[in-house]
Image (cartoon, rainbow, N blue to C red; front, top):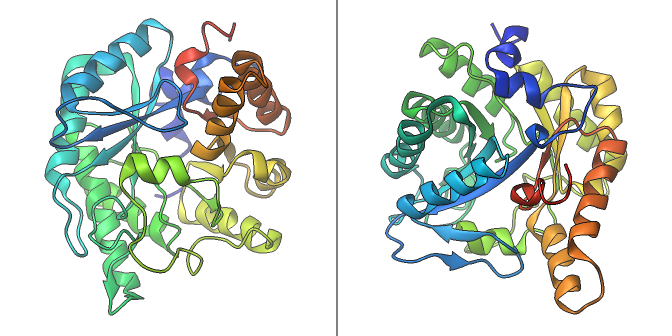
Length: 317
């Protein structure tokens, strides 16, 4: 059953995330980059306060974040061994399980579900001679979603922009007994110049070509709206626009067309812009970050994925 409203009532973290009459830290989601085989933290250029970490270091970071009031996390597992057209499930499951064992129900853990960090070619799909094999891609995504749920993920967040992936993931989760595991879809994701620091963090830059044949052209409003409508029809519980600041005009229309809660991803280039301006003494980082969050909320965003979620308490949110 794709349209199951009870999914977003299943835990206090989900209920807080979706509360419509207030803006709290519970509606901010903190990304995490956990990298297999890493010996020491690697700070990410431009992403103030964010680093590539191994599992023990990430667990310590999560503990600090929880103390600062963060309860929502979006995990990006980065395996050490890449394959041509497959997920490396083992490391992702290891990272998810470690977080779940240590923190139990103290947090809500979403897991990004995309092939780009796992494949040697860096694209978000299974490729046959540089062409997308859609059915094989959907099978890989669905199997990964089930593996993540089995390891303890609270929610699945597909970011690949392949046609039909939400439906395939929803079916596989339901068949596997995870009917109450929600899907937070990157439903309107543009081919953007603002992803640079992220691709360094997730080791996910394409090795040839670009992603314009599956991510949305920034000039196409109709396509952008249709993509989120499609994800809602396929069973996505939460929708998202990415990049957030360049998609403000779409948030409320998507909500009005679908009835779903719509979030915004303040992507790495947007966040890094604030950090770099502050480093040059050209803005107050805390004030500028808080301003952008309020703009997202003004535009209708129900939740915000931001690398600065761990600063929300000190910003008075």
